Length: 212
Image 1 (tube, rainbow, N blue to C red):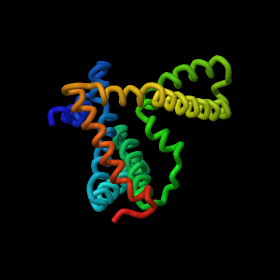
Image 2: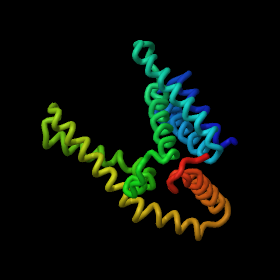
Image 3: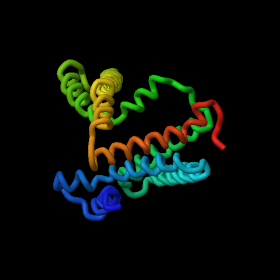
Image 4: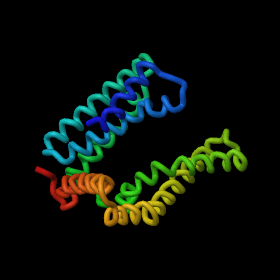
C-alpha cells in the first residue's frame, strides 16, 4: 500500500502547494493522477463487466462535466481535469467498444499497444530532434509545416518504439523473467500476471462475442 500512496498523494500536494523546484514539480505533477486513472481502468477489466461499465460511465460523466466547465469559461482547471479525465473517458469508451466486439482486430495497432511503454519513453527524443531540424529547414509559421511536423513525428515515434520493443524491451523482459531471482522475480511475475489477467478479460471480444 505504501508504494501506491506517493503517485496519488504527491500530485495533490502539488496542486495545493505548487513549487518551481524541478524535482518537486516532477513528482507532484498531476500527470501522475492520469496514470492512476489508467490503472483503475485496467483493474476494472479484470472484474465483472458491470464494474467496468460503471467505471467507464463515471469517467464519461466526469468528462462531460469538464466539458461544460470549459465551455462556461470558468476558472483554469488543472491538466488532470482538463485533459486527463476526457482522455481517460475516451480510452474507456474505446475499451467498451472492444469488449462489445465493435472494434476490428488489427495486428499493427496491437503491436503499437505492446510498444506503448517504449513509445512513452522515446517519443520525447524524436520530438526534440525533429523540432530542431524543422526550425532550420522549414518555415515554422506555415500550417503545412505543422502538418508535416506532426506526420513525421508520429511516424518516426511509432517506428522507433516498435524497434525498441522488438529488439530491446521484449527480449529483456523475457530474459529477466527467466533469470531474475528474489524480489525482482516476484515483481516481474506480478506484472506479467496482471497483464495476463487483463488479456483474459478481453478474450470474449477477441473471440467474436460480447462478454456476459
